[in-house]
Amino acid sequence: MWRRVASLSSTISSSSRSLSRNQVFFQAAFGLSIRESYATEISKPGEEGVLRPKEKAPFITFVLGGPGSGKGTQCEKIVETFGLTHLSAGDLLRREIAMHTQNGAMILNLIKDGKIVPSEVTVKLLQKELESSNSSKFLIDGFPRTEENRVAFERIVGADPDVVLFFDCPEEEMVKRVLNRNQGRVDDNITTMKKRLKIFEALNRPVIDYYKNKGKLYTINAIGTVDDIFKQVLPIFTPFEEQLKQSRHVNPKSPLVENSS
Ligand SMILES: Nc1ncnc2c1ncn2[C@@H]1O[C@H](COP(=O)(O)OP(=O)(O)OP(=O)(O)O)[C@@H](O)[C@H]1O
Ligand SMILES: Nc1ccn([C@@H]2O[C@H](COP(=O)(O)O)[C@@H](O)[C@H]2O)c(=O)n1
Ligand SMILES: [Mg+2]
Image 1 (cartoon, protein in one colour):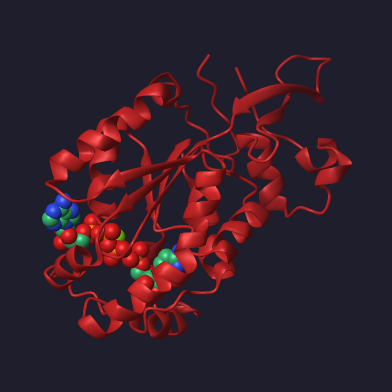
Image 2 (cartoon, protein in one colour; image 1 turned 45 degrees about the vertical axis):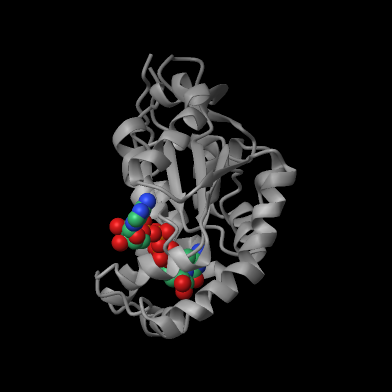
């Protein structure tokens, strides 16, 4: 049984010393950038401070696609089927607006204008969710939107995605869907939509190409019914089914780290 994660900063290799305390916890509990993590086993007398390989890295899926391509809709179905935890970057930003946080007004102005929020802000919001979650398998929707987003995530969170989904949808269909969405979003109007499409082409395409070159990109034809599109998504996760079933309850912020064994 795994016990308290203790004094990690002093036991992790010196290369980790420049990391933030949270990052050290996250690395240690989830083993993100090192892909294998360590915790201090303090249950056995005489073995205090002994490090043992522990948790596997979390399973991360990035979900890409233009505005209105159906990312959020498909994420709901993936969550139902595979139990991944859905983190929508857009929703996290809209929550900041609704909560009138320090960055709320700045975020609202950028979203209204279809522009990209500074990566540091978005990545910190994602990091907080990842760190405080009990899940170890995540769907990160609408992220990374830019190369800057991607690099900031690598730098701050220290993780790479296992899978990158790209919902490929023609512009006219995306426009039609967004204008019919009816959820009261400030960016669901034709003026903002045109700007969002331009930004998507200019800034998201390089990210798509990056993951294509890494062999991690799965392109989905996003035209058709929701169920037809999901039929393309299902087989992508099939090879990872065992990994996804073995989800553990790991919360690096919790004083007790539970073990499934
Ligand atoms: N396959 C589909 N066919 C028709 N309408 C769809 C389809 N999938 C989603 N929609 C609808 O299109 C709209 C946009 O879908 P959704 O919100 O999932 O897109 P998104 O990619 O998350 O967009 P955004 O980037 O703006 O958040 C919603 O009203 C949704 O119900
Ligand atoms: N990585 C991101 C994601 C989103 N934004 C901003 O939020 C808007 C809405 O995002 P959706 O994913 O819900 O469509 C988007 O147009 C951006 O203004 C961002 O800056 N960075
Ligand atoms: Mg969405």
